[in-house]
Length: 303
Image (cartoon, rainbow, N blue to C red):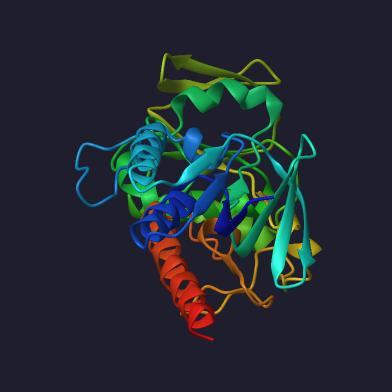
């Protein structure tokens, strides 16, 4: 069985950044990626240095993989299902029961946004006319009409945050999760229409969001949409199998500088660790983790 210097689980923005860095250090690296991460859905990142007109997650992933392959990084389209410690190494079992061995492990498995099935069509609009992160894309709704589709407090807080850019906001509480009177008053004071009703249909013209239809048959029209359902799934279970410390929300606890988890020789980068939802920060996390993985490998070669 071949032993890799490092196996990276997750081939999104953080994982690819780490792979490129480790490849440039001339390490033997394998990336295991099931090719369905959050960056596969985003059709345009608008706040990345060097891409003033936006860039899709798919473009970044394609370019990132080509870049990493230039340095000999290998890619495997599978799901990492299990991991166990064997002496100083780690054994990773994929969903087809193949086993891969590594000295160091980087978890870059990210998160999955909670999007109700009734809104599945909205994925065609993500990053173009529908967004999930106000810090990333609040600017995109500047002066435009917006429908926030969400659940309870999470959606209400998101709607309130968008008042920095626009005053034309409707909030549809699809899940019907109760919000307290104080929050309702805040929405009212900001002239945000609060609608507690289930969504039944997304209206769009290709990648351009047009509005939604409610259970009552009422139609709401808007220029842009935002999703605020909360409860995103954090893919930290693999690290948890090794006993890595997690927060209550299941994000992995990592060292601020090195990005190493509480388990020695296991690192984490991107949204699985710090729920920043920023591609640029995921890039930085991946590079920082790679630097310290390299340092550890060098130390072990000298001893």
